[in-house]
Amino acid sequence: MKFINDKIKILVFTILHTGIMQTSAQPAIHNKAETAKAQSGNVVPTNLKWSERMLLSEMHRFPESWMLDFSKSPKWTYPSAIVLDGAEQLYTKTGKKEYYDYIRGFGEKLIKEDGTILTYELEKYNIDLLNSGNVLLYLYEKEKKEKYLKALQTLRLQITGQPRTNEGSFWHKKIYPYQVWLDGLYMGMPFYAHYTKDFSKGNDAAKAYDDIIFQFDSVQKNLLDKKTGLLYHAWDESKKEAWADKESGLSPNFWGRAMGWYGMAMVDVLDYLPQNHPGRARLISYIKSFSDAIIKVQDKNSGLWYQVLDKPLENGNYEEATASAMFVYTMIKAVNKGYLPQSYKVYAKKGYHGIIKNLITVDENGVVNLNKCCAVAGLGGKPYRDGSYEYYVNEKIRSNDAKGTGPFILASIEFEKKDHQ
Image 1: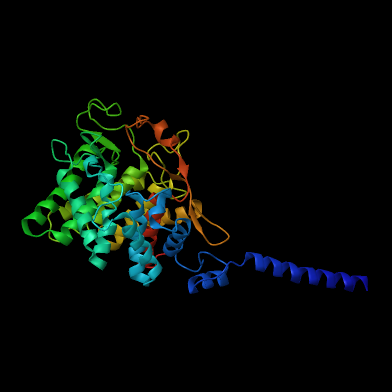
Image 2: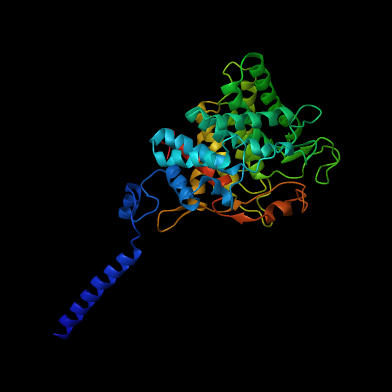
Protein backbone atom coordinates (compact mmCIF):
# COMPACT_ATOMS: atom_id res chain seq x y z
CA MET A 1 0.00 0.00 0.00
CA LYS A 2 2.82 2.34 0.97
CA PHE A 3 4.44 1.57 -2.40
CA ILE A 4 1.28 2.62 -4.28
CA ASN A 5 0.91 5.81 -2.21
CA ASP A 6 4.55 6.69 -2.94
CA LYS A 7 3.95 6.18 -6.67
CA ILE A 8 0.87 8.46 -6.53
CA LYS A 9 2.85 11.15 -4.69
CA ILE A 10 5.62 10.99 -7.27
CA LEU A 11 3.09 11.16 -10.13
CA VAL A 12 1.28 14.18 -8.59
CA PHE A 13 4.59 15.92 -7.92
CA THR A 14 5.77 15.29 -11.49
CA ILE A 15 2.53 16.66 -13.00
CA LEU A 16 2.60 19.76 -10.79
CA HIS A 17 6.32 20.32 -11.29
CA THR A 18 6.09 19.96 -15.06
CA GLY A 19 3.12 22.33 -15.15
CA ILE A 20 4.97 24.93 -13.10
CA MET A 21 8.09 24.55 -15.27
CA GLN A 22 6.11 24.87 -18.49
CA THR A 23 4.20 27.90 -17.20
CA SER A 24 7.34 29.70 -16.08
CA ALA A 25 9.35 28.72 -19.14
CA GLN A 26 6.75 29.64 -21.77
CA PRO A 27 7.17 33.24 -23.00
CA ALA A 28 4.35 34.96 -24.86
CA ILE A 29 4.36 33.74 -28.45
CA HIS A 30 3.78 36.55 -30.91
CA ASN A 31 4.19 35.13 -34.37
CA LYS A 32 4.38 31.99 -36.47
CA ALA A 33 8.18 31.90 -36.45
CA GLU A 34 8.26 32.03 -32.66
CA THR A 35 5.51 29.39 -32.46
CA ALA A 36 7.60 27.08 -34.65
CA LYS A 37 10.65 27.75 -32.47
CA ALA A 38 8.69 27.07 -29.30
CA GLN A 39 7.31 23.82 -30.70
CA SER A 40 10.75 22.62 -31.77
CA GLY A 41 12.22 23.80 -28.44
CA ASN A 42 15.03 25.54 -30.32
CA VAL A 43 15.83 29.16 -31.06
CA VAL A 44 17.65 27.84 -34.15
CA PRO A 45 16.20 24.68 -35.75
CA THR A 46 18.89 22.01 -36.03
CA ASN A 47 17.40 20.52 -39.21
CA LEU A 48 18.50 23.51 -41.32
CA LYS A 49 21.76 23.73 -43.28
CA TRP A 50 24.78 25.28 -41.55
CA SER A 51 24.47 28.54 -43.52
CA GLU A 52 21.00 29.31 -42.14
CA ARG A 53 21.82 27.97 -38.69
CA MET A 54 24.73 30.40 -38.38
CA LEU A 55 22.79 33.35 -39.82
CA LEU A 56 19.86 32.73 -37.45
CA SER A 57 22.32 32.42 -34.57
CA GLU A 58 23.84 35.80 -35.46
CA MET A 59 20.35 37.32 -35.71
CA HIS A 60 19.60 35.92 -32.25
CA ARG A 61 22.83 37.30 -30.77
CA PHE A 62 22.56 40.62 -32.58
CA PRO A 63 18.85 41.41 -33.13
CA GLU A 64 19.74 44.55 -35.15
CA SER A 65 22.29 44.06 -37.94
CA TRP A 66 24.32 47.13 -36.90
CA MET A 67 25.06 45.24 -33.64
CA LEU A 68 27.00 42.52 -35.50
CA ASP A 69 30.57 42.18 -34.29
CA PHE A 70 29.57 43.53 -30.86
CA SER A 71 28.88 47.17 -31.84
CA LYS A 72 27.39 49.05 -28.87
CA SER A 73 25.84 51.82 -30.97
CA PRO A 74 25.12 52.26 -34.71
CA LYS A 75 28.47 52.74 -36.44
CA TRP A 76 29.55 52.59 -40.08
CA THR A 77 32.03 49.74 -39.96
CA TYR A 78 32.91 46.77 -42.11
CA PRO A 79 32.17 43.43 -40.34
CA SER A 80 28.35 43.61 -40.62
CA ALA A 81 28.59 43.62 -44.41
CA ILE A 82 30.22 40.16 -44.50
CA VAL A 83 27.37 38.52 -42.58
CA LEU A 84 24.84 40.51 -44.65
CA ASP A 85 26.43 39.26 -47.88
CA GLY A 86 25.45 35.79 -46.68
CA ALA A 87 21.99 37.04 -45.70
CA GLU A 88 21.47 38.41 -49.24
CA GLN A 89 22.29 35.05 -50.79
CA LEU A 90 20.11 33.18 -48.30
CA TYR A 91 17.19 35.54 -48.91
CA THR A 92 17.52 34.90 -52.66
CA LYS A 93 17.65 31.16 -52.02
CA THR A 94 14.85 30.87 -49.41
CA GLY A 95 12.67 33.99 -49.83
CA LYS A 96 12.51 34.31 -46.02
CA LYS A 97 11.47 37.89 -45.34
CA GLU A 98 13.21 38.00 -41.95
CA TYR A 99 16.56 37.81 -43.79
CA TYR A 100 15.70 40.74 -46.04
CA ASP A 101 14.42 42.78 -43.07
CA TYR A 102 17.70 42.15 -41.27
CA ILE A 103 19.67 43.54 -44.24
CA ARG A 104 17.28 46.44 -44.71
CA GLY A 105 17.61 47.42 -41.06
CA PHE A 106 21.30 48.17 -41.59
CA GLY A 107 20.60 50.67 -44.39
CA GLU A 108 17.66 52.25 -42.57
CA LYS A 109 19.68 52.78 -39.39
CA LEU A 110 22.98 53.91 -40.88
CA ILE A 111 21.85 56.13 -43.77
CA LYS A 112 19.96 59.33 -43.03
CA GLU A 113 17.25 60.59 -45.38
CA ASP A 114 19.66 63.10 -46.96
CA GLY A 115 22.15 60.33 -47.77
CA THR A 116 24.53 61.11 -44.90
CA ILE A 117 26.28 58.01 -43.53
CA LEU A 118 26.17 57.81 -39.74
CA THR A 119 29.66 58.12 -38.10
CA TYR A 120 31.44 58.07 -41.52
CA GLU A 121 34.15 60.66 -42.19
CA LEU A 122 35.30 60.85 -45.82
CA GLU A 123 38.40 62.87 -44.98
CA LYS A 124 39.89 59.95 -43.01
CA TYR A 125 40.29 57.99 -46.25
CA ASN A 126 39.95 54.69 -44.39
CA ILE A 127 39.61 51.92 -46.99
CA ASP A 128 37.89 49.65 -44.43
CA LEU A 129 34.84 51.87 -44.67
CA LEU A 130 34.10 51.03 -48.30
CA ASN A 131 33.13 47.42 -47.56
CA SER A 132 29.67 48.17 -46.13
CA GLY A 133 28.91 49.98 -49.37
CA ASN A 134 28.16 46.48 -50.70
CA VAL A 135 25.03 46.41 -48.52
CA LEU A 136 23.90 49.72 -50.01
CA LEU A 137 24.48 48.50 -53.56
CA TYR A 138 22.17 45.59 -52.80
CA LEU A 139 19.52 47.76 -51.13
CA TYR A 140 19.63 50.34 -53.93
CA GLU A 141 19.16 47.60 -56.54
CA LYS A 142 16.11 46.39 -54.58
CA GLU A 143 14.51 49.65 -53.43
CA LYS A 144 15.95 52.47 -55.60
CA LYS A 145 15.93 54.85 -52.62
CA GLU A 146 17.64 58.16 -53.31
CA LYS A 147 19.35 58.16 -49.91
CA TYR A 148 21.24 54.99 -50.81
CA LEU A 149 22.36 56.41 -54.14
CA LYS A 150 23.70 59.56 -52.43
CA ALA A 151 25.58 57.49 -49.84
CA LEU A 152 27.05 55.31 -52.61
CA GLN A 153 28.23 58.40 -54.49
CA THR A 154 29.99 59.59 -51.33
CA LEU A 155 31.80 56.28 -51.00
CA ARG A 156 32.79 56.44 -54.67
CA LEU A 157 34.23 59.91 -54.01
CA GLN A 158 36.46 58.32 -51.38
CA ILE A 159 37.94 56.01 -54.02
CA THR A 160 38.67 59.01 -56.26
CA GLY A 161 40.46 60.83 -53.44
CA GLN A 162 42.09 57.85 -51.68
CA PRO A 163 45.83 58.57 -51.33
CA ARG A 164 48.11 56.21 -53.23
CA THR A 165 51.68 54.96 -53.23
CA ASN A 166 53.98 56.32 -55.92
CA GLU A 167 53.15 53.37 -58.17
CA GLY A 168 49.40 53.69 -57.60
CA SER A 169 48.35 51.32 -54.76
CA PHE A 170 45.77 52.65 -52.32
CA TRP A 171 47.04 53.59 -48.88
CA HIS A 172 45.19 51.67 -46.19
CA LYS A 173 44.24 54.86 -44.35
CA LYS A 174 45.33 58.49 -44.48
CA ILE A 175 46.95 58.03 -41.04
CA TYR A 176 49.07 55.15 -42.48
CA PRO A 177 50.98 56.91 -45.30
CA TYR A 178 52.45 54.78 -48.11
CA GLN A 179 51.17 51.59 -46.45
CA VAL A 180 49.40 48.84 -48.37
CA TRP A 181 47.69 46.17 -46.24
CA LEU A 182 46.27 42.92 -47.63
CA ASP A 183 43.04 43.66 -45.70
CA GLY A 184 42.45 46.70 -47.91
CA LEU A 185 42.00 44.63 -51.06
CA TYR A 186 38.89 43.00 -49.60
CA MET A 187 37.66 46.22 -48.00
CA GLY A 188 37.83 48.22 -51.20
CA MET A 189 38.02 46.19 -54.40
CA PRO A 190 34.75 44.17 -54.47
CA PHE A 191 32.85 47.39 -53.73
CA TYR A 192 34.82 49.32 -56.39
CA ALA A 193 34.13 46.56 -58.97
CA HIS A 194 30.44 46.19 -58.06
CA TYR A 195 29.88 49.97 -58.14
CA THR A 196 31.62 50.16 -61.53
CA LYS A 197 29.43 47.38 -62.95
CA ASP A 198 26.25 49.10 -61.72
CA PHE A 199 27.00 52.75 -62.47
CA SER A 200 29.99 53.29 -64.79
CA LYS A 201 30.02 53.17 -68.58
CA GLY A 202 32.50 53.15 -71.44
CA ASN A 203 35.93 54.62 -70.79
CA ASP A 204 35.21 55.36 -67.12
CA ALA A 205 34.34 51.72 -66.50
CA ALA A 206 37.37 50.46 -68.45
CA LYS A 207 39.71 52.69 -66.43
CA ALA A 208 38.15 51.54 -63.14
CA TYR A 209 38.47 47.83 -63.98
CA ASP A 210 42.12 48.35 -65.01
CA ASP A 211 42.73 50.18 -61.73
CA ILE A 212 41.18 47.33 -59.72
CA ILE A 213 43.36 44.71 -61.44
CA PHE A 214 46.40 46.92 -60.92
CA GLN A 215 45.81 46.86 -57.14
CA PHE A 216 46.18 43.05 -57.19
CA ASP A 217 49.17 43.18 -59.57
CA SER A 218 50.90 45.62 -57.23
CA VAL A 219 50.26 43.45 -54.16
CA GLN A 220 51.63 40.37 -55.95
CA LYS A 221 54.73 42.34 -56.87
CA ASN A 222 55.38 43.94 -53.48
CA LEU A 223 53.94 41.66 -50.75
CA LEU A 224 54.55 38.14 -52.08
CA ASP A 225 57.18 35.90 -50.54
CA LYS A 226 58.49 33.96 -53.52
CA LYS A 227 59.87 31.13 -51.39
CA THR A 228 56.58 30.17 -49.66
CA GLY A 229 53.99 31.77 -51.94
CA LEU A 230 52.48 33.44 -48.86
CA LEU A 231 51.91 37.20 -48.69
CA TYR A 232 53.02 39.44 -45.84
CA HIS A 233 50.39 41.39 -43.91
CA ALA A 234 51.56 44.78 -45.17
CA TRP A 235 54.14 46.79 -47.06
CA ASP A 236 55.43 50.31 -46.44
CA GLU A 237 56.66 51.88 -49.65
CA SER A 238 58.52 54.57 -47.69
CA LYS A 239 60.23 51.94 -45.44
CA LYS A 240 60.02 54.44 -42.57
CA GLU A 241 57.53 52.63 -40.34
CA ALA A 242 59.02 50.83 -37.30
CA TRP A 243 57.40 47.50 -38.28
CA ALA A 244 58.74 47.69 -41.85
CA ASP A 245 61.89 45.88 -42.95
CA LYS A 246 64.45 48.55 -43.82
CA GLU A 247 65.32 46.92 -47.16
CA SER A 248 62.00 45.49 -48.40
CA GLY A 249 59.46 47.62 -46.48
CA LEU A 250 57.56 44.42 -45.56
CA SER A 251 55.96 43.62 -42.22
CA PRO A 252 57.58 40.66 -40.43
CA ASN A 253 54.89 37.93 -40.46
CA PHE A 254 52.26 36.02 -42.44
CA TRP A 255 49.05 36.72 -40.53
CA GLY A 256 46.25 34.26 -41.33
CA ARG A 257 43.35 36.68 -41.62
CA ALA A 258 45.29 39.13 -43.81
CA MET A 259 45.77 36.31 -46.31
CA GLY A 260 42.12 35.39 -45.84
CA TRP A 261 40.96 38.88 -46.76
CA TYR A 262 43.12 38.76 -49.87
CA GLY A 263 41.72 35.42 -51.05
CA MET A 264 38.12 36.56 -50.56
CA ALA A 265 38.89 39.79 -52.40
CA MET A 266 40.05 37.91 -55.49
CA VAL A 267 37.10 35.51 -55.77
CA ASP A 268 34.57 38.27 -55.06
CA VAL A 269 36.01 40.80 -57.53
CA LEU A 270 35.69 38.23 -60.30
CA ASP A 271 31.89 38.34 -59.81
CA TYR A 272 31.90 41.85 -61.32
CA LEU A 273 34.91 41.94 -63.64
CA PRO A 274 33.88 41.64 -67.33
CA GLN A 275 34.46 38.18 -68.80
CA ASN A 276 36.63 39.63 -71.58
CA HIS A 277 38.86 41.72 -69.29
CA PRO A 278 42.54 40.80 -69.84
CA GLY A 279 43.13 40.94 -66.07
CA ARG A 280 40.79 38.00 -65.35
CA ALA A 281 43.34 35.34 -66.30
CA ARG A 282 45.99 36.97 -64.11
CA LEU A 283 43.65 37.16 -61.13
CA ILE A 284 42.75 33.49 -61.56
CA SER A 285 46.47 32.61 -61.68
CA TYR A 286 46.93 34.52 -58.40
CA ILE A 287 44.10 32.49 -56.83
CA LYS A 288 45.88 29.29 -57.83
CA SER A 289 49.27 30.30 -56.42
CA PHE A 290 47.53 31.61 -53.27
CA SER A 291 45.67 28.30 -52.82
CA ASP A 292 48.84 26.25 -53.39
CA ALA A 293 50.58 28.28 -50.68
CA ILE A 294 47.83 27.94 -48.07
CA ILE A 295 47.44 24.20 -48.72
CA LYS A 296 51.11 23.79 -47.74
CA VAL A 297 50.46 25.36 -44.32
CA GLN A 298 47.08 23.67 -43.69
CA ASP A 299 47.26 21.42 -40.64
CA LYS A 300 47.28 17.83 -41.92
CA ASN A 301 45.21 16.48 -39.01
CA SER A 302 42.61 19.16 -38.25
CA GLY A 303 42.41 20.78 -41.69
CA LEU A 304 42.67 24.21 -40.03
CA TRP A 305 45.08 27.13 -40.30
CA TYR A 306 47.10 28.95 -37.66
CA GLN A 307 47.03 32.57 -36.52
CA VAL A 308 50.61 32.96 -37.81
CA LEU A 309 50.52 30.71 -40.83
CA ASP A 310 54.06 29.36 -41.11
CA LYS A 311 54.88 28.82 -37.40
CA PRO A 312 52.42 26.18 -36.18
CA LEU A 313 54.69 24.75 -33.51
CA GLU A 314 55.79 28.00 -31.89
CA ASN A 315 54.65 28.84 -28.38
CA GLY A 316 51.21 30.47 -28.22
CA ASN A 317 50.16 29.88 -31.84
CA TYR A 318 46.66 28.46 -32.33
CA GLU A 319 44.23 27.24 -34.98
CA GLU A 320 42.28 30.38 -35.81
CA ALA A 321 38.66 30.45 -36.99
CA THR A 322 38.38 33.56 -39.17
CA ALA A 323 41.33 32.74 -41.42
CA SER A 324 40.25 29.10 -41.66
CA ALA A 325 36.72 30.10 -42.74
CA MET A 326 38.08 32.62 -45.28
CA PHE A 327 40.45 30.09 -46.86
CA VAL A 328 37.69 27.50 -47.12
CA TYR A 329 35.36 30.06 -48.73
CA THR A 330 38.03 31.21 -51.19
CA MET A 331 38.86 27.71 -52.36
CA ILE A 332 35.36 26.23 -52.56
CA LYS A 333 34.00 29.29 -54.38
CA ALA A 334 36.96 29.16 -56.79
CA VAL A 335 36.26 25.47 -57.47
CA ASN A 336 32.52 26.09 -57.96
CA LYS A 337 33.24 28.95 -60.39
CA GLY A 338 35.81 26.94 -62.33
CA TYR A 339 38.81 29.08 -61.33
CA LEU A 340 40.46 26.09 -59.63
CA PRO A 341 40.43 22.42 -60.67
CA GLN A 342 38.08 20.05 -58.80
CA SER A 343 41.13 18.52 -57.05
CA TYR A 344 41.27 21.56 -54.73
CA LYS A 345 37.86 20.70 -53.30
CA VAL A 346 39.38 18.06 -51.03
CA TYR A 347 41.40 20.74 -49.17
CA ALA A 348 38.43 23.09 -48.87
CA LYS A 349 36.28 20.23 -47.61
CA LYS A 350 38.91 19.15 -45.07
CA GLY A 351 39.06 22.73 -43.77
CA TYR A 352 35.28 23.06 -43.63
CA HIS A 353 34.79 19.84 -41.71
CA GLY A 354 37.71 20.84 -39.47
CA ILE A 355 35.88 24.05 -38.55
CA ILE A 356 32.65 22.18 -37.76
CA LYS A 357 34.45 19.51 -35.73
CA ASN A 358 36.92 21.68 -33.81
CA LEU A 359 35.63 25.26 -33.71
CA ILE A 360 31.81 25.04 -33.77
CA THR A 361 29.74 24.45 -30.65
CA VAL A 362 25.93 24.30 -30.51
CA ASP A 363 24.01 25.49 -27.43
CA GLU A 364 21.07 23.52 -26.04
CA ASN A 365 18.67 25.97 -27.76
CA GLY A 366 20.27 25.29 -31.16
CA VAL A 367 22.31 28.53 -31.31
CA VAL A 368 25.58 27.94 -33.17
CA ASN A 369 28.89 29.42 -31.98
CA LEU A 370 32.17 29.85 -33.85
CA ASN A 371 35.07 29.82 -31.39
CA LYS A 372 38.74 30.87 -31.44
CA CYS A 373 38.35 34.00 -33.55
CA CYS A 374 41.11 36.60 -33.40
CA ALA A 375 39.17 39.75 -32.44
CA VAL A 376 41.43 42.27 -34.16
CA ALA A 377 44.98 42.72 -35.42
CA GLY A 378 46.70 45.54 -37.26
CA LEU A 379 49.95 47.45 -37.51
CA GLY A 380 51.16 50.74 -36.06
CA GLY A 381 48.71 53.02 -34.24
CA LYS A 382 48.53 53.60 -30.48
CA PRO A 383 49.39 51.49 -28.54
CA TYR A 384 51.92 50.51 -31.18
CA ARG A 385 51.43 47.18 -32.99
CA ASP A 386 54.81 45.97 -34.19
CA GLY A 387 53.74 42.98 -36.32
CA SER A 388 55.90 40.58 -34.30
CA TYR A 389 54.95 36.94 -33.77
CA GLU A 390 54.27 37.71 -30.08
CA TYR A 391 51.96 40.55 -31.05
CA TYR A 392 49.71 38.39 -33.26
CA VAL A 393 49.37 35.44 -30.88
CA ASN A 394 48.56 37.69 -27.92
CA GLU A 395 45.73 39.66 -29.48
CA LYS A 396 42.30 38.98 -27.95
CA ILE A 397 40.51 35.75 -28.92
CA ARG A 398 36.72 35.59 -28.83
CA SER A 399 33.73 33.65 -30.15
CA ASN A 400 31.22 34.73 -32.81
CA ASP A 401 33.26 37.47 -34.42
CA ALA A 402 31.53 38.55 -37.65
CA LYS A 403 34.88 38.34 -39.44
CA GLY A 404 34.56 34.57 -38.90
CA THR A 405 30.81 33.91 -38.85
CA GLY A 406 30.35 35.84 -42.12
CA PRO A 407 32.90 33.80 -44.09
CA PHE A 408 31.57 30.60 -42.48
CA ILE A 409 28.06 31.42 -43.78
CA LEU A 410 29.47 32.19 -47.23
CA ALA A 411 31.56 29.00 -47.31
CA SER A 412 28.53 26.98 -46.20
CA ILE A 413 26.42 28.46 -49.01
CA GLU A 414 29.09 27.41 -51.53
CA PHE A 415 29.14 23.84 -50.19
CA GLU A 416 25.34 23.68 -50.14
CA LYS A 417 25.10 24.82 -53.79
CA LYS A 418 26.54 21.53 -54.92
CA ASP A 419 25.39 19.71 -51.80
CA HIS A 420 28.96 18.70 -51.07
CA GLN A 421 28.42 18.05 -47.38
